[in-house]
Image 1: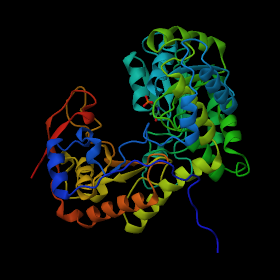
Image 2 (image 1 turned 45 degrees about the horizontal axis):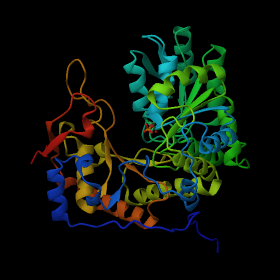
Image 3 (image 1 turned 90 degrees about the vertical axis):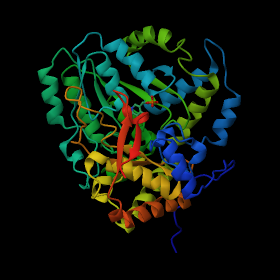
Image 4 (image 1 turned 135 degrees about the vertical axis):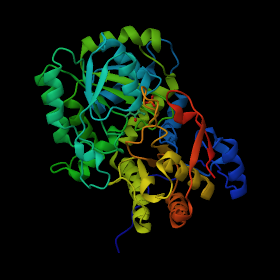
Amino acid sequence: MELPFAEAWKIKMVEPIKKSTREQREQWLKEAHYNVFMLESEKIYIDCLTDSGTGAMSDRQWAAMMTGDESYAGARSFYELKAAIKDITGFDYVIPTHQGRAAENVMFSAILTKQGMVVPGNAHFDTTKGHIEFRKCTAIDVTIPEAKNTQLEIPFKGEVSLELLEKVLKENQGNIPCMVLTVTNNTVGGQPVSMKNIRETCELCHKYGVRVNIDSARFVENAYFIKMREEGYADKTIREICKEMFSYADSMTMSAKKDGLVNMGGFIATRHEDLYEACKAFCIPFEGFLTYGGMNGRDMAALAVGLRENTEFEMVETRVKQVEYLAKKLDEYGIPYQRPVGGHAIFVDAQKILTKVPKEEFPAQTLTCELYLEAGVRGCEIGYILADRDPVTRENRFGGLDLLRLCICRRTYTNNHMDVIAAALKNVYDRRDSITHGVKITWEAELMRHFTVQLDRVK
Ligand SMILES: *Cc1c(COP(=O)(O)O)cnc(C)c1O
């Protein structure tokens, strides 16, 4: 018989987690004003809030921590990190930063030199967009329109529409400091971009004299999907695929909290000396000296190991297969989610489940609460609350999707935990018709309200 799939690691250290009773969770959620960001992590059984910085490091990474060189200038750990980045991406110049948004802050400070500049991209991540808009510049989304259809199954749903991109490039000549290519495309559900699309996007941008910055938080997962889904890549290693992906681009900004397999960190890397020089000027005041940026020596050492470890096929395969495992369970139970499942999370379609909860009562937030009450599983609303109000009319924005996101942490939970998540969702799904009321806002911040919003049950 064929041997079943199993994880490419074994467990050396464990962290106890606690179950709770439904009565306790009712009380705690009420105290948290029905906002799961306000729950203490001790009150969570399985935490799927985010996969950012929440994964487990390996014994080799922990060992590297002990060898970290904390020298202010010229730390050996920096050169270890730089060598790992060069091996994987081919980029010569590296600036460490304390996380992904810090890399964006340094780079956009250097290149968004005047207001009104335009940065096209395949659904910019929210911090990326934030940094662009903060500088009174415009982020234009050029993702393929198919990405909006949640039930359409195509292999590379995160791609750039070359047609839309070319239109932006033509209309804004001389006013585009770079294009941001996000792999995988987080905003549309962790969907990958094919090598062909990466190459053609970069070629098109270069034709117009525009550089391409790869927002690389999940570049390894993207390489995995290329290997599994794109013709001509089945026999290539993940490293070869990563090298080729970056070979077409000019630079990268990285949140190492994702595919770097560390809890905190990030960096900028580029092949261009002029860009490096421009970024240097902002690294020093915002982050720190050039050979540590925003990071400890030990954290750079652990990241160097993490990058090498995660670009081994078996490691990223284990990760993506666990997300697929949970998706299969949901298929079995008929629970609708954004298809096909992406690399790091499942986005459950709350509108399709809680059909009796009016949109004014926030179905996805209601589902997030119900899942927590059911089993102590914490997901995150990516829906109407996150969408904030229209800045002019101050009306809620109900135009987009209303989803419950379940992120899967790297190397953290077993498939038994996935079974619990799926069963808990099924129980909520089975009683969906009895859930007729949602939540109402009692207090909210003007911007980015979802982190701190206070809610109450409608009934
Ligand atoms: C997480 C993320 C960022 C921001 O990184 P932080 O480390 O959270 O600051 C930027 N882009 C993408 C695609 C991300 O997933």
